[in-house]
View 1 (cartoon, rainbow, N blue to C red):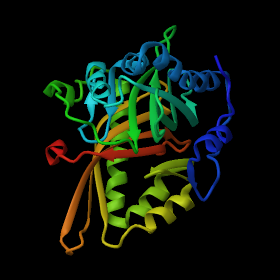
View 2 (view 1 turned 180 degrees about the vertical axis):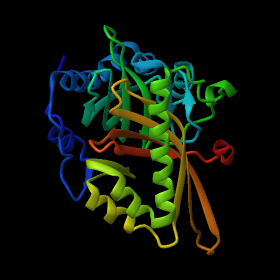
View 3 (view 1 turned 45 degrees about the horizontal axis):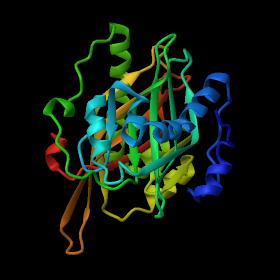
View 4 (view 1 turned 120 degrees about the horizontal axis):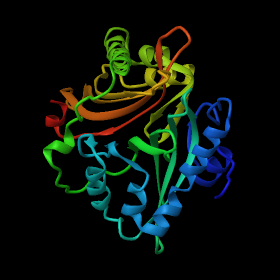
Length: 310
């Protein structure tokens, strides 16, 4: 198992563009977080040994939520395998993941990482640099598996055939206490969207981000409330963004969670007519000491089909 410098090495190697601040603030490190970061870094070994598809899905939970650009959010490992196999580079591609940050829940059963995903063809070719967010879960005595994954900046998915059941969140079968926690984080996400509608996107994001939290804005990682406020404040006048959560999960300790949802961005085209763009997102949330939820990292990709918003 390799060890790497967490942020500087990735920044120098791939030239990741960080907005305003050079690195994301690191929370206190611990053995569980360190081991997860190392596990995340070794996913490329799995791809090298098993191939792009099998090596990638080996880390996915059976009920994983997978977000690839061009299709709605999918549910289940089989659906993720279809998306990965549809990549034109699937048979000849190697991967390298470089986490830029992450954290672990209080009970050590949930965690998240985010960073750079480099796609390199086995023969001579151009390396493609994307980003990712992964939310991990594990049971006592079991290995970490990715429960939710978002590709950020990757090309649109090709022609794929998915079952309708793979596009629908699974029915909830969690204890009452967990169900109540899920409801609170979904409510926080909905209120987040309401705040953006009432006060503007820049205000909502800069006031809902956790201390040191981040947003992927295109190819950039934007860190901290001030930089996030400046980034969204620079969007074209008249552009609005609304969203709603469609799925959520909360750690048993109640301090870490993720939501997946759908977005609608409305702006003006060259003719002046309103133009809507559709997408989906993955957000990782942390419960603050005052009981409020704030997001730690958030990223999105496109879903062109309007039907995916229903």
